[in-house]
Image (cartoon, rainbow, N blue to C red):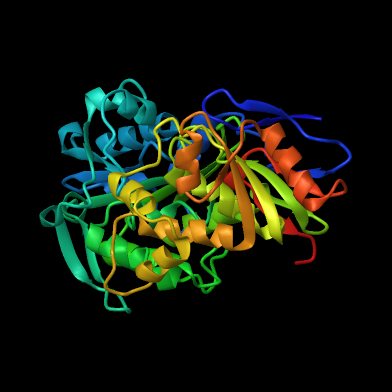
Length: 425
């Protein structure tokens, strides 16, 4: 059977053997909103858990609107145009509205990328700025978390009279789901706070997993920081496979996010009867498969349905290489993953992006990972602890040699956007 995986910007068609295929796990069909503009307008006028945005905004001297960076495919123009119009109609002058890009510790987004995030007009009509996590002086200390971690949040947000966040709710391999509170932490938090958010002991907690909210310490940390920073109004959306709006959930931070989570969970959950020997998956295509750092999400996303000792075959474009300089050095300077993890577990050890090594180790502890990419050579892939393959089909052939001709195989074309589960689990 021919199956198209999300890969880069154009996708990748692969052939999988019918006799081994037990399931193609995808998103449940969710009809796109027939009138997205009207749906957004209604959500702003009749929000969950708080008054309409126009009432909240009235009398405020200025506003900060936080949006996701390039790694989240949020259809911002359809959300921001009516939202910004309401702010101006409520009396907040355009020059007093700041759009803050929640980069977390990712690189800033400039030029064409800003137009990709916000559309061609908004970057030229409003003040748009990037968050810089490593500049501690540009953050405000709001106290400490219940674990003693410092809570530093971008000063431009903290001093705003009206605080708004706009995000996308989708499965997240550490925090359960994205959106809502994650716009604040790690989105606009200082590195010192992000370090605590990504602490190894939190990531290795069994509840720090895709789709899990209850008892998830990563989610709890993000929510604690968001509560400390304050959010006056939030907009969360869900999207379909074509990245069209399927739901808009606006209002109070927690009420709106929880409504979005319920909708996203229904759409993203896909089940099979029993674990499989081989999972063929992706990292959801561009922009999530632009770096190896982001591509780890595809590996981890397959774990719920692969047998211990099974094989995960990952297709990721990796057009921008491995990731940050720190993440790259961390992986390439060590040839022993167990020794590297032992160092990372030491409380005094800290390197930016080391948390993704923790997630990589989770995947490799359960399954062998074979990787097809055009972005990195075979020697580099081996140094990243995965096995290079010339094609997905070659990877399948290798996996069948390992697991036998009757091995069970599943495909997750959209990778981490899907939450694979076992029926009855």
